[in-house]
Amino acid sequence: MTIERKPASAKNAEHYLWGDGCDGWHLLNRDDVSVIQERMPLGTSEQMHYHKIARQFFFVLDGRATMDVDGERVVLGKHQGIEISPGASHQLRNESSEDLSFLVFSVPKSHKDRYER
Image (tube, rainbow, N blue to C red):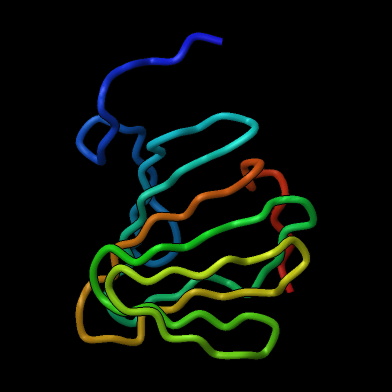
């Protein structure tokens, strides 16, 4: 496997839209691991879901995130993160008054391993 040796950022990464005005950038997109930078406007959320195989780690860059994990609510501030194990139901929401920017690391990548609750 050839590894590209250039800096990855939202300026040069593959971009996609999701949800209600949310953005994502694939900073690293391999089958064994992915790193995505995402932006959620205030008042947005993802759907409650789980992954059978992928383990994830969410890390807040800016703003405040509310994560529901298996019925427990966790609020994350800037430079805080949370691990989500395979099988754990989770939903990320932006209940704050500003945009939420975060990184999500998935091992392996979770794109074909997402199941709605």
